[in-house]
Length: 83
Image (cartoon, rainbow, N blue to C red):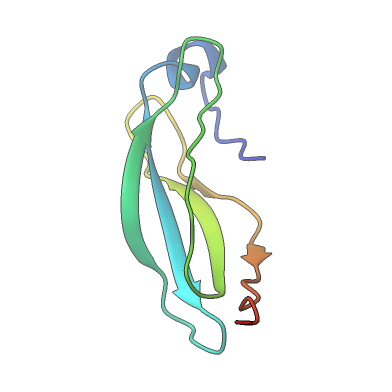
């Protein structure tokens, strides 16, 4: 969950969200996708990662909205065993 509302009505719709990820063990996040916040103030993204990453969402500040960064979420990829 990300909350970055100086003016909630103005910030919820249409703002760009950078989806960032980093490899486990690294400290640097890299933006790999940008999405827009929908009408109801939500955004989503479907990803099929091939390796373990730590993800977060980042909203840049504007004149009407404060910038914010979400909590981190680790997605662990387990290799399938080949038969």
